[in-house]
Image (cartoon, rainbow, N blue to C red; front, top):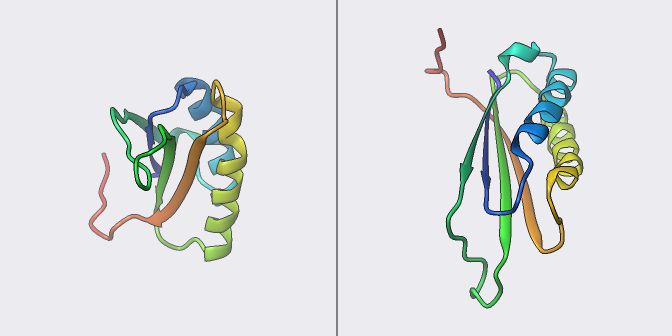
Length: 110
């Protein structure tokens, strides 16, 4: 915990983003740095709206153990949205989104 997944079709400095994101998550949700795990999934194709433009996307999902307030989750979302453009080759035309959610009660780790 936290489990972080980044789906992207835009040119993204993945390692740089993860190394900047982890301390941000630690500070915002009071967790340990070595608990942050990020995986990246490159999206081969995206279609936005009527498909008339070639939009690219970056969507970050952060799953946390339950107990964080909606305010904390909203602050983290905004902070991630502010951080993302710094790790894109170009932020122009990139659709950015972030979701912070609770892990299911069945979550286990070793």
